[in-house]
Structures are given as structure tokens and as C-alpha cells.
Length: 144
Image 1 (cartoon, rainbow, N blue to C red):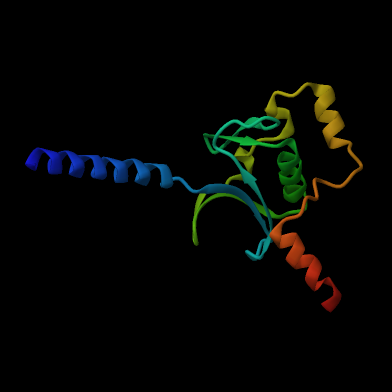
Image 2: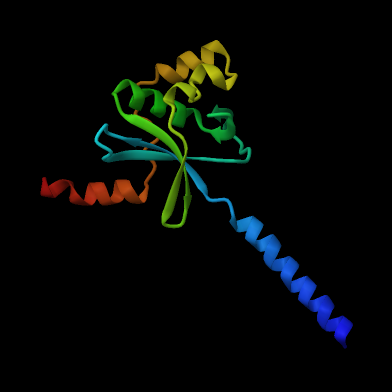
């Protein structure tokens, strides 16, 4: 009986240890803000490969990003906004990279020169899929 209880205790403790490791990593975002710190927008970046995403380095860490995200970061930086990579754990945030000079550009993604030119020359707006922030923003447009 003691062996069974010891085995179950080890099993449960190991399960919590594995669960703790699985939940230890948060979500990663590139966040844009004005020089005074006011939030302007964000794009999620991934830590694992996904189809349609490209490997990119931010401050010596590897992430997976869409070309739309990279174009957005280039446009935000050109507009004078501050960009950071942050990791979110629920309601807390931790800055991972705050050096825009160390951010990936379209030229860094390993795309062919023609693909880079096509992405940069698109006349269509960036991917405007619905997000909570866009929905909230659009709901308050009439109150300006």
C-alpha cells in the first residue's frame, strides 16, 4: 500500500511538473507604440513553425512571422513608432526585444527578390481580418 501511495505521489508530482513546463511559456507579440508609450497596435508572432510563416530573428531569438507582420513593422518604424517584442503571461508582460535594429526585415526572410518586391508593392491594405481591438475601435468611430 505504501508503495502504491508513493507511486501515485510521484506520478501526480511529475504530472504537475510537466504541466508547469507546458504553461511556462506565454504568447509573443510585436507591439507598436508612440514615443510617449501610447499603444498603437500589435501582431502575434509564433515560437513554432506554421505554414505560411517565415523564420525570423529578434534579438537572437527565433520566431515565426508572416510577411504581413514584417511589412507592418517596417511601416511602423518608418512612421517613427517604437517597436518591442514582448511575452505575455495572462495579465503580465515581459519585454524580450526592444532594439528595432535587431528586428527582421523582408530581406531577412529568405524570400526571392521578386517576392519581396511584390509584397512591398502591394496596393491593398494589410491583412484586415477582424480582431477584438479593431471591432472595439470601429464601434467607437461614430463618437469622434
